[in-house]
Amino acid sequence: MLKVELARYHQMALSCLVLTHSFLAMPASFNVIETYLKLVESCSTDRTVYTHILHPEVEQTEYPNLYTKTTQYRNLDGIMESVRDSRELVDAQRIQITRIVQCASEIVVVEMKWEGTLAIETNRVRRGQLLKGNMAMVFELRDEKIYRQRSYICYEPF
Image (cartoon, rainbow, N blue to C red; front, side, top):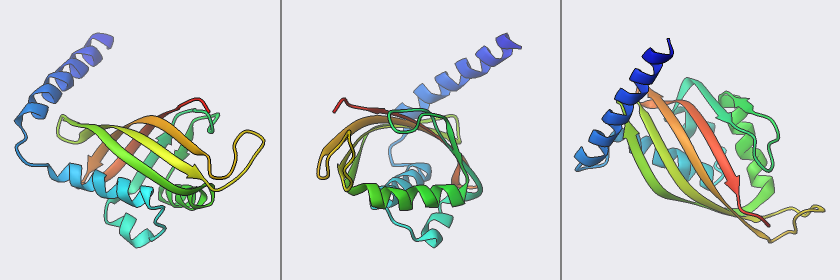
């Protein structure tokens, strides 16, 4: 079983290398993901816009980080709640994509830098403080929409 899995991932890695060098124009999947990240960056809570790019069975997984101590699983409702929470936590945020790679036909990996100006004050942070982090997200698409998203977030020390 392990040998089969390793062979599958090896084949995906080869596909990834070929695809990253063969695109002359931005694939549609990149546009979907870029639109999603812009919505998240702006803290848009317009559910209708999200339904155009998120699959009805979307699942977002956020792995533990500085703020999320346990793995979080979110469906569309949970994603919308998380965006609303972000509006209360940050006055402004910026997402800068540093690398985007399509592997296989439905998998896209995005590396990015994030920074946000805090809207709250706690015993650990002050209002107006700028936080920075590095992120990697793995997107799986189905029917030209985001079906799965896995987030790996690493905040810089503050």
